[in-house]
Image (cartoon, rainbow, N blue to C red; front, side, top):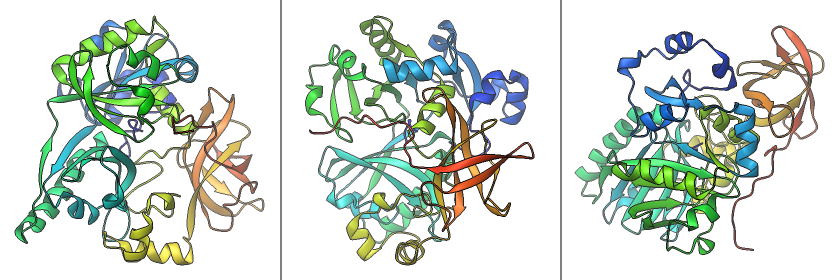
Length: 408
């Protein structure tokens, strides 16, 4: 997701934005400074050298005083603290909240143990992805969900419409949108040791994908051991009045090794981890099967369906999709979104959806959709950048090994 979060088409911000003229960025994101929403950490970002840009209707830091390359490497070597408060967290409650949610997502929600969560996809009637999301079962009658900032309005409208119908038939479900909370993502090898200084919760017993409600730095927080970087880490939902103090405490306890990090490095990190960016690598016309998320479709759901678009998705599982999302490494300039992919004979076989230069691997990496048959690891291809073809090869994801904290 996460993330955070782990973004909306047309508003995704890559390394290019860091070098762009700020006025041009504003025009591209069609929002004036006055119209932009600000997180409670806005002044804290500015005071710490954050370069603020429009993103999904918010003013967010793309980077701080260090470069995006330096920030990316520091996250993997030490740690990063991201403000992802622009993302939307909400709770579903009621004895029927699980069957309600199962009508909208591909996950086997019923099978989740309390205190655990998973990545899932909200689908439409055609099997396309409305959004990807991390969902957590707090208890059997309480689900906690985080959706992407750029998808907030359409996601909430979609859920609300189905909730009205569900409740009209007697279903017991209600919701609360956590606009009173902020969301921080602490990522990297120092995430757990630093956070442990601020909580009595034994973090060595909280594994990847698990959730706790606990005190952190004196505030009642929701913590999920997850993130959008491929590193170990936590997403921390904190009451907004405590968010700045918590950010300061995390940075102080790390003795300068955990750094504030912006959206530019977040994009590099998630691409190195082979994680999808909504609006680039997944859209309303893309199914979870095409996006390589078969693993996120619960075994029971594969057998029973029961979610929007199930007929399309189950058919693709049985017969195979016509296109597939794959990873690439390439020569020449880094490929970018919409770069054409050709086979060795020069025939179009697909399109890049995300790409760039990997700060950690020191080479070009990318993801894109290709026709089935060209998706196997090692398949050679040509990638067009500014009209010129460069050598590419289908490469297994993640590009950088993940370091999620799991039971040994």
